[in-house]
Image (tube, rainbow, N blue to C red):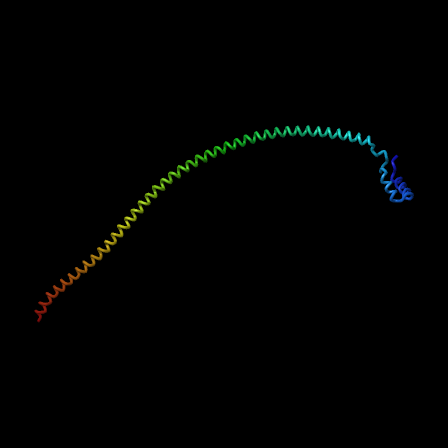
Length: 187
């Protein structure tokens, strides 16, 4: 029979009067809240335990089967992905090899151009050196010519000065030869 809340309260009050409140409370806590028919027996617990273990085992078997299936699908997907990635990597490596080949060819052409430019620079340096040598020689010749011109002008000045003195002496001599007879004739 199930005890009602009113019956529980009445029992507690009577026990409190007989054995005291603390002891009555302890005793009431030991009673099941809704009757003994609701309390499980050892056989009930063992039956529940056996049923629960069977359900756990069945669930474990089912989960392991699903895990194995998922693992199989995942392995297939991984293998497929690896295969596709491998193909992509091979394709990328082939493209990189092609690019490296083109870079090598470009470097070879650049090396050839550098060699030609070095040759041109060497020839140009030779021509510049020749031109500088000619310019230096021309500068020496111009310096020598300028010195000759300065010396020639100095010699010319001296010669002109001599000529002017000679002409002056001749003019003075002619003037004196005219002036003396003229002065004698006038006297």
